[in-house]
Amino acid sequence: MVKMKRVWQFGAVGLASMMLLAGCSSKSNKEGQATASTGAVGLSVKSGVYVVPDGKKASDSKKYLALNIKIDNKTKKALSVSSYDMSLYDKDGNKMADTSVYDDDNGFQELESGNISGGKSTTGYVVFNVQKGQEYELHYKGNDGEEKQKDVKVKIDADKYPDHTKQMTKLAKEYVDQVFLGTKADDKAALTNDLQKEHDDFKTAFAERLGK
Image (cartoon, rainbow, N blue to C red; front, side):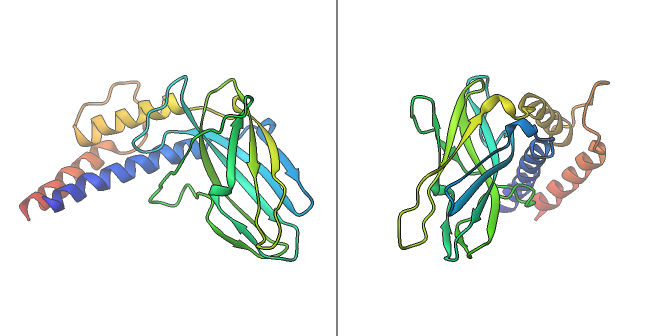
């Protein structure tokens, strides 16, 4: 039973990666970029895109916005960085929920926790639950271990970033139907993969695991 489960896990991971990469490969709207600095720490939102994390569902009222940020340490001291230091607030001061995203192919790199040496920088994604049509404020509070750093704040307009989540969800369903269930593709199928080959490979792998 364990080996059978691994077959399904392989498919799920591949599917999740496909959905994430579809979102992240979209061209970012330059109007969505924002930059701020306290003199000691710089915060830049390089790009952003809406994604559908594995196990989550996106709707018109509930979206997952992935912000690709860059943090610059402008001091000579090491700066401690963590995604937990990032907070997103709506116009009423309510803190938005964040979420973790896992991509087995490393196509989606979350902001990693660690230290940035003086004069260096780091980049990565942070993902928040937002509503389109709303404006937010992204806060980052650095920590150099000696003194409290002021919050670096940048404005985030949720409408400035590309949203292909409906297309991604449709593609995911199409992939599952054709590869795992063997459903015949219609004439308007959008996926360009060799899905028949992937379906045959899946059946072969499943049969081998089942036999063991």
